[in-house]
Image 1: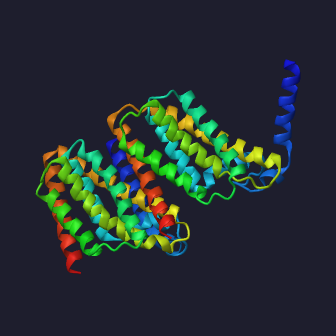
Image 2: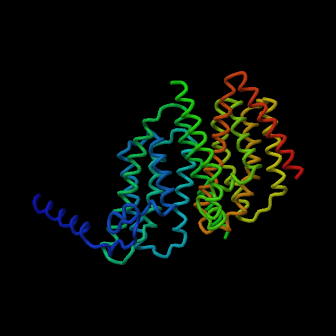
Image 3: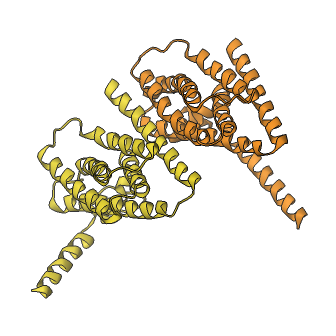
Length: 199
Length: 198
């Protein structure tokens, strides 16, 4: 049974990696296919801003543990992606990554330690917003897997890398530097939200 | 050894000067063409009144010491975003340009006179001026094709000007540094008067 499961897993992985770029036709930094899907959130500026904000929050807040933060992010991205399939005409969705960036950036700027559930909820909101706006290039299953899998790998990796890197910063001026960057993210997001809502 | 080091510093400074002075013609097309990160980044740097006020915020923060030295650069962008939102949504704020010039005068004077009010007074004062600066930036935001990139650019540039002010302000640890910084504050206040009259 274990061998069959492994075989099935390997077959799925091979199918995803070896399929031509049709499923992820968008070219990112000269790459196509699944590697392009992984980098895709970084070239969508509001997604990148939301990921940066949630990663800073994850690194700044001691609770919950990094594994729980990662699970909250990935689960909420899947939920957001599922919501995309059932709520494709929801008009407010494109603004949600900016709302999440403003919220997470604002919390980073604010500074004090949050309860674990509040931190996980904020990261979850950001993940949901990104998942809800991760729109596949084509209407085929593989394109959906590429888009969601790529976004999850990108966001999850950044959360872990930035999170653990920030934990090493202990000095007051370093912690304040994180808060300043958080305030920059929140300010940028709030301005564009005002522009979108004011139109 | 010492000579080597000073030669290297001179060479680096000369190279930096070439880069900074040569940057404008190279970037001029991009800056005034499509909206984007570089346009937004250059926007606060193109107005001497903005530069003077932002540097003064950092200098004053350094004079006030902790926690103001770090709190003011956090408060300013957030309140500036609020002012920017007012500008974006077309809410009129009277005398915006006068407010920006006045911010250079008042903040410059605070530095020149080495005034140290309570933290909440400093925060309210800096926050009030941030609304004028934000409004000026915000009213120009809708013209750009990529407003988010533009916003990030100008927020980061504004923040870096604060940090430049703080870095200069750290000279207050030494007596001659205090004199230099207070003189700098007086120069900023005088420049603000010129902006007001102009």
